[in-house]
Amino acid sequence: MNLRFIDAAQIAQVCDLPGLIAHLRAAHREPPPDVQRVLMQQHAASGPGNAVLVWPAWQAGRNLGVKVVTMFPENRTVPAVQGVYLLFDGRNGAPQAVIDGTELTCWKTAADSALGADLLARADAHRLLMVGAGALAPHLIRAYQAIRPGLTQVRVWNRTPAKAQAVAAAVTGTPAAATMDLEAAVRSADIICCATSSAEPLVRGAWLRAGTHLDLIGGFTPAMRETDDAAMRRARIFVDSRWFTMDHAGDLTQAIASGAITPADVRGDLFQLCRGEVAGRTDADQITLFKSGGGAHLDLMAAQYIADRCAA
Image (cartoon, rainbow, N blue to C red; front, top):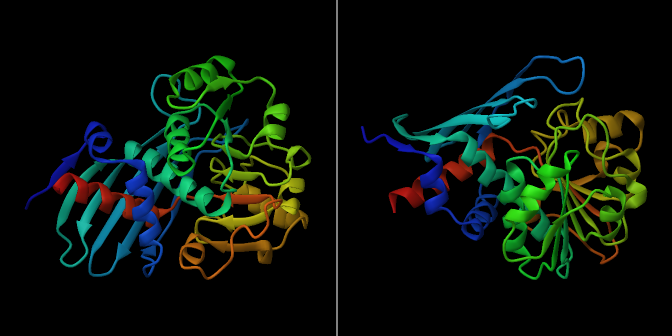
Protein backbone atom coordinates (compact mmCIF):
# COMPACT_ATOMS: atom_id res chain seq x y z
CA MET A 1 0.00 0.00 0.00
CA ASN A 2 1.39 3.41 -1.00
CA LEU A 3 -0.33 5.70 1.50
CA ARG A 4 0.64 9.34 1.14
CA PHE A 5 0.48 11.86 4.01
CA ILE A 6 -0.11 15.38 2.71
CA ASP A 7 0.28 18.22 5.20
CA ALA A 8 -0.64 21.88 4.92
CA ALA A 9 2.80 22.91 3.67
CA GLN A 10 2.64 20.40 0.81
CA ILE A 11 -0.82 21.60 -0.21
CA ALA A 12 0.37 25.20 -0.31
CA GLN A 13 3.44 24.15 -2.31
CA VAL A 14 1.71 22.14 -5.06
CA CYS A 15 -1.64 23.93 -5.41
CA ASP A 16 -2.54 27.13 -7.20
CA LEU A 17 -5.95 28.75 -7.10
CA PRO A 18 -6.43 29.22 -10.87
CA GLY A 19 -5.69 25.51 -11.33
CA LEU A 20 -8.05 24.41 -8.56
CA ILE A 21 -10.83 26.70 -9.80
CA ALA A 22 -10.43 25.25 -13.31
CA HIS A 23 -10.49 21.73 -11.85
CA LEU A 24 -13.75 22.43 -9.98
CA ARG A 25 -15.30 23.94 -13.11
CA ALA A 26 -14.50 20.80 -15.11
CA ALA A 27 -15.58 18.46 -12.29
CA HIS A 28 -19.00 20.12 -12.13
CA ARG A 29 -19.59 19.10 -15.74
CA GLU A 30 -19.25 15.43 -14.76
CA PRO A 31 -21.88 13.26 -13.00
CA PRO A 32 -21.95 14.26 -9.30
CA PRO A 33 -20.59 11.93 -6.62
CA ASP A 34 -22.90 10.28 -4.09
CA VAL A 35 -22.77 12.27 -0.85
CA GLN A 36 -23.92 12.23 2.75
CA ARG A 37 -23.90 14.81 5.54
CA VAL A 38 -23.67 14.14 9.28
CA LEU A 39 -23.62 17.08 11.70
CA MET A 40 -23.26 16.86 15.47
CA GLN A 41 -23.51 20.15 17.35
CA GLN A 42 -23.39 21.38 20.92
CA HIS A 43 -25.95 24.12 21.43
CA ALA A 44 -24.68 27.30 23.05
CA ALA A 45 -26.65 29.95 24.90
CA SER A 46 -25.22 32.68 22.68
CA GLY A 47 -24.32 32.05 19.06
CA PRO A 48 -23.43 28.81 17.28
CA GLY A 49 -22.05 25.99 19.42
CA ASN A 50 -19.16 23.65 18.72
CA ALA A 51 -19.77 21.16 15.92
CA VAL A 52 -18.30 18.17 14.10
CA LEU A 53 -19.13 17.34 10.49
CA VAL A 54 -18.59 14.00 8.78
CA TRP A 55 -18.86 14.28 4.99
CA PRO A 56 -18.35 11.18 2.81
CA ALA A 57 -18.47 11.29 -1.00
CA TRP A 58 -18.10 8.48 -3.54
CA GLN A 59 -17.40 8.87 -7.23
CA ALA A 60 -17.90 5.35 -8.52
CA GLY A 61 -14.91 3.93 -10.35
CA ARG A 62 -12.52 6.70 -9.35
CA ASN A 63 -12.28 7.83 -5.72
CA LEU A 64 -14.16 7.91 -2.48
CA GLY A 65 -13.30 10.01 0.53
CA VAL A 66 -14.48 11.31 3.86
CA LYS A 67 -13.74 14.53 5.70
CA VAL A 68 -14.05 14.86 9.45
CA VAL A 69 -14.01 18.51 10.43
CA THR A 70 -14.50 20.28 13.74
CA MET A 71 -15.79 23.84 14.14
CA PHE A 72 -15.19 25.60 17.46
CA PRO A 73 -16.18 29.26 16.87
CA GLU A 74 -14.73 30.52 20.15
CA ASN A 75 -11.20 29.19 19.51
CA ARG A 76 -8.57 31.84 19.99
CA THR A 77 -5.19 30.06 20.01
CA VAL A 78 -5.94 27.44 17.32
CA PRO A 79 -8.04 27.69 14.14
CA ALA A 80 -11.82 27.63 14.55
CA VAL A 81 -12.07 25.01 11.79
CA GLN A 82 -9.84 21.93 11.81
CA GLY A 83 -10.04 18.52 10.20
CA VAL A 84 -8.59 15.61 8.29
CA TYR A 85 -9.43 14.09 4.91
CA LEU A 86 -9.11 10.40 3.98
CA LEU A 87 -8.93 9.58 0.26
CA PHE A 88 -9.51 6.03 -1.03
CA ASP A 89 -9.38 4.32 -4.40
CA GLY A 90 -13.00 4.10 -5.54
CA ARG A 91 -12.36 0.87 -7.43
CA ASN A 92 -10.92 -1.31 -4.70
CA GLY A 93 -11.24 0.70 -1.47
CA ALA A 94 -7.48 0.98 -0.90
CA PRO A 95 -6.41 4.04 1.15
CA GLN A 96 -4.51 6.54 -0.99
CA ALA A 97 -3.89 9.64 1.10
CA VAL A 98 -4.37 11.31 4.46
CA ILE A 99 -4.71 15.02 3.79
CA ASP A 100 -4.68 18.01 6.15
CA GLY A 101 -8.40 18.76 6.23
CA THR A 102 -8.05 22.30 7.55
CA GLU A 103 -5.86 23.43 4.66
CA LEU A 104 -7.94 21.46 2.14
CA THR A 105 -11.09 23.17 3.44
CA CYS A 106 -9.55 26.63 3.03
CA TRP A 107 -8.47 25.97 -0.56
CA LYS A 108 -11.71 24.22 -1.50
CA THR A 109 -13.93 26.91 0.00
CA ALA A 110 -12.00 29.72 -1.66
CA ALA A 111 -12.06 28.02 -5.06
CA ASP A 112 -15.76 27.14 -4.73
CA SER A 113 -16.72 30.74 -3.95
CA ALA A 114 -14.44 32.16 -6.63
CA LEU A 115 -15.95 29.84 -9.23
CA GLY A 116 -19.42 31.07 -8.26
CA ALA A 117 -18.25 34.68 -8.43
CA ASP A 118 -16.58 34.13 -11.80
CA LEU A 119 -19.88 32.86 -13.19
CA LEU A 120 -22.08 35.50 -11.53
CA ALA A 121 -20.19 38.71 -10.76
CA ARG A 122 -19.84 41.46 -13.35
CA ALA A 123 -16.78 41.10 -15.55
CA ASP A 124 -15.73 44.65 -14.62
CA ALA A 125 -16.08 44.12 -10.84
CA HIS A 126 -13.05 45.74 -9.22
CA ARG A 127 -13.91 46.54 -5.59
CA LEU A 128 -13.97 43.64 -3.11
CA LEU A 129 -15.30 43.70 0.44
CA MET A 130 -14.27 40.85 2.74
CA VAL A 131 -16.64 40.53 5.71
CA GLY A 132 -14.88 38.43 8.33
CA ALA A 133 -11.19 38.09 9.13
CA GLY A 134 -10.81 34.44 10.08
CA ALA A 135 -8.49 31.83 8.62
CA LEU A 136 -10.48 31.67 5.39
CA ALA A 137 -10.24 35.37 4.57
CA PRO A 138 -6.71 35.43 3.03
CA HIS A 139 -7.51 32.40 0.84
CA LEU A 140 -10.77 33.98 -0.32
CA ILE A 141 -9.14 37.29 -1.20
CA ARG A 142 -6.46 35.51 -3.28
CA ALA A 143 -9.18 33.47 -5.02
CA TYR A 144 -11.11 36.59 -6.04
CA GLN A 145 -7.86 38.14 -7.26
CA ALA A 146 -7.39 35.04 -9.42
CA ILE A 147 -10.78 35.39 -11.16
CA ARG A 148 -10.80 39.20 -11.26
CA PRO A 149 -7.16 40.24 -11.74
CA GLY A 150 -8.35 43.79 -12.34
CA LEU A 151 -9.32 44.30 -8.69
CA THR A 152 -8.29 47.78 -7.61
CA GLN A 153 -9.49 47.76 -4.00
CA VAL A 154 -9.91 45.33 -1.12
CA ARG A 155 -11.68 46.33 2.08
CA VAL A 156 -11.83 44.09 5.15
CA TRP A 157 -14.42 44.38 7.94
CA ASN A 158 -14.49 42.43 11.17
CA ARG A 159 -16.11 42.95 14.56
CA THR A 160 -12.57 43.06 15.94
CA PRO A 161 -10.83 45.84 13.98
CA ALA A 162 -7.33 44.54 14.73
CA LYS A 163 -8.12 41.29 12.92
CA ALA A 164 -9.38 43.17 9.88
CA GLN A 165 -6.22 45.27 9.89
CA ALA A 166 -4.02 42.15 10.03
CA VAL A 167 -5.79 40.51 7.07
CA ALA A 168 -5.66 43.73 5.04
CA ALA A 169 -1.96 44.21 5.78
CA ALA A 170 -1.19 40.75 4.38
CA VAL A 171 -2.90 41.35 1.01
CA THR A 172 -0.49 41.62 -1.92
CA GLY A 173 -1.13 42.78 -5.46
CA THR A 174 -4.13 44.99 -4.67
CA PRO A 175 -4.42 48.06 -2.42
CA ALA A 176 -6.14 46.92 0.78
CA ALA A 177 -7.33 48.47 4.02
CA ALA A 178 -9.52 47.66 7.00
CA THR A 179 -12.82 49.47 7.44
CA MET A 180 -15.03 50.00 10.47
CA ASP A 181 -18.03 51.27 8.50
CA LEU A 182 -19.73 48.14 7.18
CA GLU A 183 -22.68 49.94 5.59
CA ALA A 184 -20.49 52.35 3.60
CA ALA A 185 -18.23 49.50 2.50
CA VAL A 186 -21.19 47.41 1.32
CA ARG A 187 -22.66 50.34 -0.59
CA SER A 188 -19.44 50.84 -2.58
CA ALA A 189 -18.44 47.21 -3.22
CA ASP A 190 -18.82 45.23 -6.45
CA ILE A 191 -18.20 41.82 -4.79
CA ILE A 192 -19.04 41.19 -1.15
CA CYS A 193 -17.82 38.01 0.53
CA CYS A 194 -19.13 37.03 3.98
CA ALA A 195 -17.24 34.32 5.89
CA THR A 196 -18.39 34.63 9.50
CA SER A 197 -20.06 32.59 12.23
CA SER A 198 -22.80 35.18 12.67
CA ALA A 199 -26.26 34.20 13.90
CA GLU A 200 -27.69 37.61 12.91
CA PRO A 201 -27.71 39.32 9.49
CA LEU A 202 -24.69 41.54 8.87
CA VAL A 203 -25.18 42.70 5.27
CA ARG A 204 -28.52 44.45 4.74
CA GLY A 205 -30.39 44.25 1.46
CA ALA A 206 -31.12 47.97 1.57
CA TRP A 207 -27.38 48.65 1.34
CA LEU A 208 -26.81 46.66 -1.86
CA ARG A 209 -26.45 48.68 -5.02
CA ALA A 210 -27.33 47.52 -8.52
CA GLY A 211 -24.85 45.09 -10.03
CA THR A 212 -23.42 43.80 -6.76
CA HIS A 213 -22.46 40.15 -6.26
CA LEU A 214 -22.95 38.81 -2.71
CA ASP A 215 -21.20 35.62 -1.64
CA LEU A 216 -22.36 33.97 1.61
CA ILE A 217 -20.07 31.32 3.08
CA GLY A 218 -20.30 31.24 6.86
CA GLY A 219 -23.81 30.08 7.75
CA PHE A 220 -23.85 26.28 7.75
CA THR A 221 -26.80 25.68 10.13
CA PRO A 222 -30.42 26.94 10.14
CA ALA A 223 -29.59 29.16 13.12
CA MET A 224 -26.79 31.05 11.33
CA ARG A 225 -27.32 33.98 8.99
CA GLU A 226 -25.21 36.62 7.22
CA THR A 227 -27.80 38.65 5.30
CA ASP A 228 -31.47 39.62 5.69
CA ASP A 229 -34.76 38.95 3.91
CA ALA A 230 -34.49 42.17 1.91
CA ALA A 231 -31.26 40.96 0.28
CA MET A 232 -32.79 37.59 -0.50
CA ARG A 233 -35.83 39.25 -2.12
CA ARG A 234 -33.70 41.58 -4.24
CA ALA A 235 -31.16 39.02 -5.43
CA ARG A 236 -30.97 36.45 -8.20
CA ILE A 237 -30.04 33.46 -6.02
CA PHE A 238 -27.73 30.52 -6.73
CA VAL A 239 -26.11 27.83 -4.56
CA ASP A 240 -23.06 25.63 -4.95
CA SER A 241 -25.26 22.56 -4.41
CA ARG A 242 -28.81 22.06 -3.22
CA TRP A 243 -27.82 19.09 -1.02
CA PHE A 244 -25.80 21.13 1.47
CA THR A 245 -27.73 24.42 1.42
CA MET A 246 -31.51 24.22 0.96
CA ASP A 247 -32.30 22.47 4.25
CA HIS A 248 -29.21 23.55 6.20
CA ALA A 249 -28.27 27.19 5.55
CA GLY A 250 -30.11 29.76 7.64
CA ASP A 251 -29.91 32.44 4.96
CA LEU A 252 -32.14 30.19 2.85
CA THR A 253 -34.23 28.33 5.44
CA GLN A 254 -35.15 31.46 7.39
CA ALA A 255 -35.98 33.47 4.26
CA ILE A 256 -38.17 30.62 2.99
CA ALA A 257 -39.88 30.27 6.39
CA SER A 258 -40.67 33.99 6.49
CA GLY A 259 -42.10 33.94 2.96
CA ALA A 260 -39.45 36.34 1.63
CA ILE A 261 -38.52 33.74 -1.01
CA THR A 262 -39.63 30.29 -2.10
CA PRO A 263 -37.42 27.31 -3.03
CA ALA A 264 -38.17 28.11 -6.68
CA ASP A 265 -36.32 31.42 -6.26
CA VAL A 266 -33.04 29.48 -6.10
CA ARG A 267 -32.28 29.58 -9.83
CA GLY A 268 -29.58 26.92 -10.01
CA ASP A 269 -26.42 25.38 -8.62
CA LEU A 270 -22.82 25.09 -9.80
CA PHE A 271 -23.51 21.91 -11.73
CA GLN A 272 -26.22 23.67 -13.75
CA LEU A 273 -24.15 26.85 -14.17
CA CYS A 274 -21.01 25.03 -15.31
CA ARG A 275 -22.99 22.92 -17.77
CA GLY A 276 -24.82 25.95 -19.15
CA GLU A 277 -28.20 24.56 -18.09
CA VAL A 278 -29.23 27.78 -16.33
CA ALA A 279 -28.36 31.40 -17.00
CA GLY A 280 -26.32 33.20 -14.37
CA ARG A 281 -26.21 36.99 -14.49
CA THR A 282 -28.38 38.22 -17.36
CA ASP A 283 -28.26 41.96 -16.62
CA ALA A 284 -25.45 44.26 -15.49
CA ASP A 285 -27.73 45.79 -12.84
CA GLN A 286 -28.84 42.52 -11.27
CA ILE A 287 -27.86 41.73 -7.71
CA THR A 288 -26.57 38.16 -7.69
CA LEU A 289 -26.24 36.02 -4.56
CA PHE A 290 -24.25 32.81 -4.19
CA LYS A 291 -24.78 30.67 -1.10
CA SER A 292 -21.88 28.31 -0.47
CA GLY A 293 -22.65 25.22 1.56
CA GLY A 294 -19.37 23.51 0.88
CA GLY A 295 -20.09 19.82 0.89
CA ALA A 296 -18.55 16.39 0.56
CA HIS A 297 -18.49 16.45 -3.25
CA LEU A 298 -16.33 19.59 -3.24
CA ASP A 299 -13.95 18.11 -0.69
CA LEU A 300 -13.56 15.03 -2.89
CA MET A 301 -12.94 17.16 -5.97
CA ALA A 302 -10.30 19.20 -4.12
CA ALA A 303 -8.69 16.08 -2.61
CA GLN A 304 -8.38 14.53 -6.07
CA TYR A 305 -6.71 17.69 -7.36
CA ILE A 306 -4.30 17.85 -4.40
CA ALA A 307 -3.38 14.16 -4.61
CA ASP A 308 -2.83 14.36 -8.35
CA ARG A 309 -0.60 17.43 -8.00
CA CYS A 310 1.43 15.77 -5.23
CA ALA A 311 1.85 12.63 -7.33
CA ALA A 312 3.02 14.72 -10.28
